[in-house]
Image (cartoon, rainbow, N blue to C red; front, side):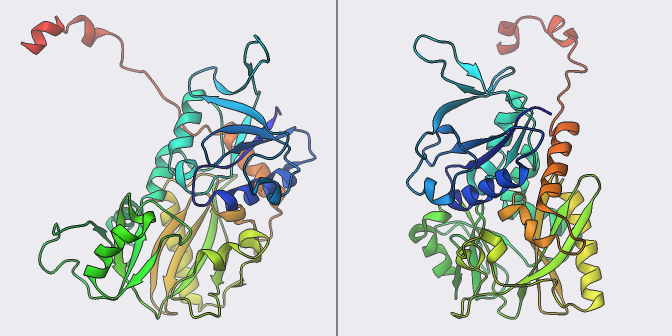
Amino acid sequence: MGDIAVIFGGPSPEHDVSVLTGLQAARALGPGPARVRGLYWAKTGDWFEVDPGLEGADFADGPPRGASPLRLVASPGGGFVAPGGRLGRERPVEVEVAVNCCHGGPGEDGSLQAALDLAQVSYTGPTAAGAALGMDKLGFGAVVSAAGLPCLPRVALGGGGDHPPGWPGFPGPYIVKPRFGGSSIGIDVVEDAETARARLVANPHLRQGAVLEPYRPDLYDLQVAVRTWPELQLSAIERPLRSSTGAEIYTYSDKYVGGQGMASAPRELPARLGTGLEADLRQAARQVAVLAGVRGVARLDFLSDGQELFVNEINTIPGSLARYLWVDPPLEFARLLADMVEEAARRPAVQWTTAGADGSALRSAGTIAGKLG
């Protein structure tokens, strides 16, 4: 196999966690038969090739010492290219598969996936369409609801007086979430709809859109990973444990501020669940994986009070690539990554076709001026 690139970072609030995931993946992939290359996406949007053996602290102030500038060319024959030196031509960075470890923002919302599709670079994780759906909490919730799966009501939150009387149709208190965000960043718990509207101005993470849903303090989180190669498979189920500070939700700090990313977050794993609840969760997880077009490894998040179960969200590129969840059945991180790489190489994220575009419509169209008349 040719070189494997591990992509991490990105202009996202989850940039730092993405760096940690990427460095973990690079270590687990090498040494091996393929050369592992580190491709760092800076907060500024610039690209660099870096030593994949660096530590997280080396990126605390931006591109590390020795980073080499790159460009991403989104066209056939493009991909990642490096400067050729003084008066020299750019040289391609030969990559057979890119392992996408970018959390949030353009690395997880379909933007990077679309660019790699246009550049004809094979990559792990969600397709552009799957990434966009997973990042859109309102769209994902609508798909889940339309399929008849249990979920809490979720509505779009806009400013001003654009909501009808009786909106949102369910009582408070409420959770306000960024429509296109992840990892609990920017989430607020509020008492009433007017306060929720006010958060649109005060909370910078809500500027691109927000959703509102009921806050149920009796519900706790349950999470399971799903992978799609060599076949659809579910991990053990975990119950993340919230901080002891009385947090109302499972916070970003609970998840990631522990030294090893999600792997060091407090949890009950496997979660102690009743047989019926576990069976319901696993059945729902398989349905969601199909509905959302999961590719690679994703994490599905549920809410429960021990009896009822609600589909909450999907994380299409989870922290640490959800390696910590594969304890039953046990699965080594290197094997998890190798299967993702094999899937990327053997099952492209997109295959376009021009079948039917034979020119007949153009030949019979007449003049453009006639169509505009």
